[in-house]
Image (cartoon, rainbow, N blue to C red; front, side):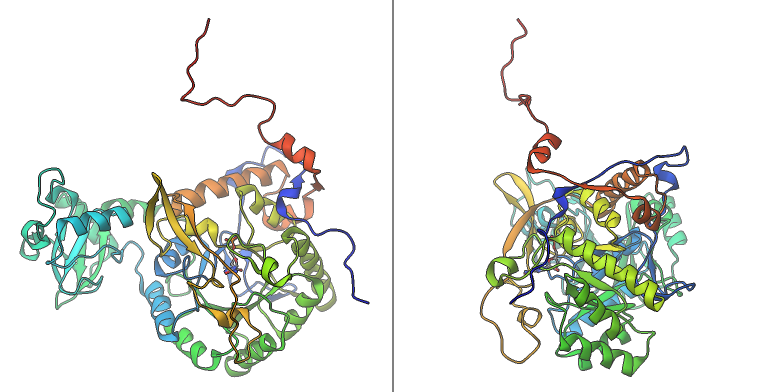
Length: 503
Ligand code: RVP
């Protein structure tokens, strides 16, 4: 006879937090969101902590170098996707590690032969109007000029006009050299009344651009997640097949943490992968594992030496694993079960293995719930895919700006390694979909607003830290009728197109 888990499995929307006593110290400015990323022994500190409890999903449509930089700037960590060649993944990791804060790598680079129409299309797609012109159109090509929106008039100019006819050419540009500091670059920007300063090496190859607005922003990023050498920290996804060749390249490139990316992690393949990594490099190379949805899976991976463990099967917004394979568990129930197992493991063995809630976060308040249920941090796909910094195109769908977002198990990602059991044969069915998500602007503004809400909720529960929230939180399951009560109900919502008369 099979084992039946008692009770139903629930998801975040079926829970609410019941407020606790808040003292006058309980204000969002006093809340710290610092949280452990890697395992540690009782009485010791984790080797790596996050300054905010957010990581970005190991997905082609989420975590490239721009996401890595933007999220580390806010205090979280991206895991660069592994569904690409090891060399390409290592290059992305390197580019995050090489990034000098405040020096932006252009995502909108032109060649001299491109047309005004193409410039407009690129501007529409990336939302950026300052575009360097290089010989090969790449972000680190030889600098030939710059185009800004002051260089053309879309209403008057011929769309076929070539970039070289209207760009500001290299000889008229003020540039910084490769040794320039951010502070000096900012002085040049102010003294010469510039909006952006391209930085080039001795042979005139573009290294990056310093923007006037970014310098000010950099000064106000107190949460930046930096390594001992003041470089941004970044993680990298790996699989259970080619780790012997992939991991060395990722570590050479500077990856701070690795994470096995798999929809089902309670397997011999994960044990082998973790053993190989720790056997080859020692415990100082950190590797997360998963995903699991119960205490048994957690214990297995904790005993294998995983540095953190991800929870969640089938709850991802683009994930159809539950529908295609019939495996999974409601995300809230899975998380509660695994966090309980983590606390028992800590009591028993004196080792704390952080838990990451992966997938299924829809509303900001779901993050507060996940933390209250015991998660040390979250992994988010849909949430980050909506921002400028995700690697996908911004498109206009029926008058609304959207970003593309597709699952790693979709045909588009063709990342079958992640969705089989680690053996050689490839599966032939999809576990993910290809979709759009509403465009949400810059990551910085989005994350700030979300975390302000999380901090406010924590204050309502009388908690100033995540561990305090986990101890003090009081949660209640809600009936489907009370979910209706939680939204606007029994009123006629105002519609701005309605015609209204006041008599
Ligand atoms: P969400 O944040 O709800 O968009 O979920 C993101 C998570 O979904 C990922 O971190 C991963 O665990 C899972 N995923 C990614 N691709 C797929 C799929 O194609 N089924 N699922």
